[in-house]
Amino acid sequence: MSDCIFCKIVAGQIPAAKIYEDDKVLAFLDINPINPGHTLVIPKIHFSNLTQTPVEVSQNLIMVIKKISPAIMKGVGAQGFNLGLNNGSIAGQIIFHMHFHLIPRFADDGHKLWSGRQYQLGEMEKVAENIKKFLIPNSYFLYG
Image (cartoon, rainbow, N blue to C red; front, side, top):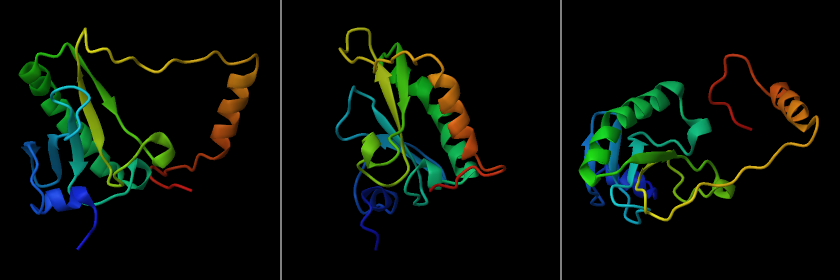
C-alpha cells in the first residue's frame, strides 16, 4: 500500500470532498484552502511531479480544469482564479503526487501575487541561451 495521501484518497481509504471524478482524474476541495472552493486536481495514477508526468496525463488534467473552473467560480461567487503548481520541495510542493491548485479569487481576499524584477542588460539573452542548451528534442517529461 502506498503512503501517498492522494493515492489513498483515490483508493477511497481517506475521505475527500470530491467535486469531479472520471476514470483518469479526481478533483476535490483542499482541506487547508487559500479561499473557499480551493480545489486540487490530480491524476488517479501516481506521478511525483509535473516533469515526471506523461503529456497525455497532463492534458487530461488541463481539460478537467477547463471543465470545472467555471462551476467552481459560480459555486463560490469568485471573480477569477489562480492555477498553481508547486514542482519540487524548493517550490513548496508538500505532497509528492502531481497536482494542480485551482484557487478562486475575490476582490477583497487580501492575497497578493509575487513580484517580479527587471533583468540586467544582456542577462535575459544569456539566461535564454543557457536554458536552450538543456532542451531535449521531442522530450516532454524528462527531468534531471
